Length: 350
Image: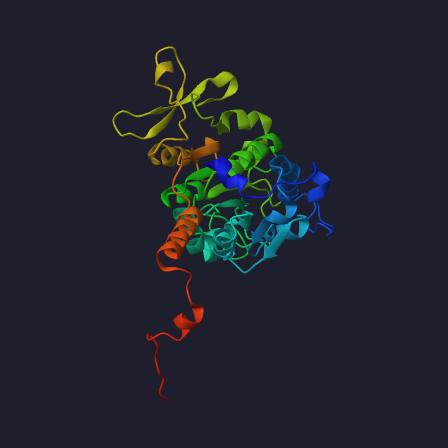
């Protein structure tokens, strides 16, 4: 099914390179911003799809990340705050010959845009949503965001944030998203691999990307980037493989038989058989959700990255197209004039 959906998008007539996807616009993010790394990864990955550039669209909302469409030599739209998923839904549903990507941030997607995000996920529209999470409002100069940790000192929370933060991956799983993944801006190989899997997926794919804001929240993800700390903190998920991490794979994830929760253990000969094998394709999101809750929201210790869930569900665009075809076969083409002048009208009396 994934290949059929990709086959609807026209292929490029000639081999492409990263250079073909770079626009003529000057990239204007703060020096050192993690957005540069993500942009380079996406521009370098796009040629692998082999799709015609004029049939690829990037839609963004408002925020630092939302400058993305300017820098891609494809079609794009810098839309309005939080509404990128809604605009992209209309585009993807009406133009199935397009590869539609949404670029958004933690503030744009999870605050004013939260409602649009969850409904795109539950509908399973054929969109690929890249959610840049820097745990801060960068464009408006350093206020706390929906993913900022409790107690975060910012310009808008001088005594510390009181809000419990969203876990974007948990949120997406709760909204019945059919593809959910997490990666890190500085891990080019891992980021590219996740993008490839998202592109192949039929339906909505949400990829949370931990992205460093070196001006207003520098070092937020150092635990996951420092080589020494990352060995003990990062849990790399691979479908069909035991969930082990730590130096030499000495740590593992097991299910507590009494509570059903997931626990971190030191692997021994006695418990090795109990180590959970990652199943991203499990019909139930229960285990994926439990995995998403392992990370400590303050220290990010025990943070899973990779594809947490990838399951097949009916795709909204396909279902809608089938309904329209059926309606034409049963009733013939509609009459817009008759609809507008139909009997269900109201007369407004002043």
